[in-house]
Image 1 (cartoon, one colour):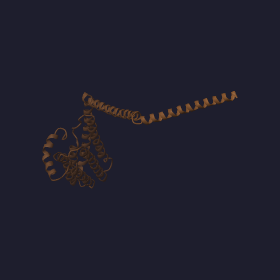
Image 2 (image 1 turned 90 degrees about the vertical axis):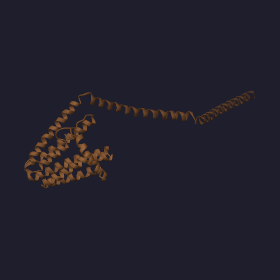
Image 3 (image 1 turned 90 degrees about the horizontal axis):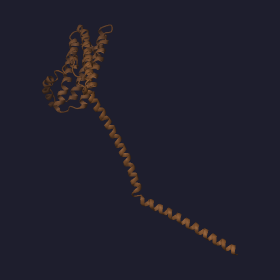
Image 4 (image 1 turned 45 degrees about the horizontal axis):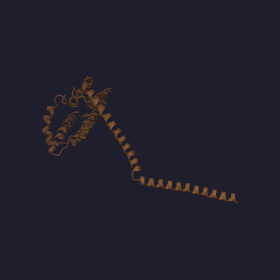
Length: 276
């Protein structure tokens, strides 16, 4: 919801803060790394039962994730590598947080309640994969009830009381599953239109063009090499070849002449012997 419908408003409000942090020498990668550290601290606080401390640390983790983008834009350092690092760090943070919740449930509850955070983590990973795959196909898959910011807020509400945590996790699982289903339906419907199909066709045509270009380069190289060999045979070494050819012909003609002279001498000697 924040990433889709309210993204422009959030960017306008966080842009001055990002510019101020960038002026103080704080980079987006530093915010991403420190956000990962605070997520680990949050998970440790939850696992040890300090839920109220975990709320503060979770807010700190969310602020790091919220401000790394504005800092990168303010400093002009937005890059593919930074976006990749941020995305991977977000997935690690989700896994660490749910691991801390699972540890807490194992320590304080009995039964199969530890499957709740594992199920939430699985559906969360599915939502992230749906967006990444849809964007790779040229389809916008942002939006939904429970994106990462909404999940962090709802999880923090569950940390207010130990009695609220399990019902909160159940609600979180239901809304996250509804988000995954809604995103799947939206991408499925968008894929039926001509736009994404045309994008896929253009990409396949570009792939074929590149393959043809590589093949043409290979063919040109082979033809050029063959032409170069013919040129080398028909160019500079021609004089040597002709010289060897002339020597061979000269030696052959000399052999023929000498053989003819031997036959003539043999005939003369034979005629002389018969007359005697």
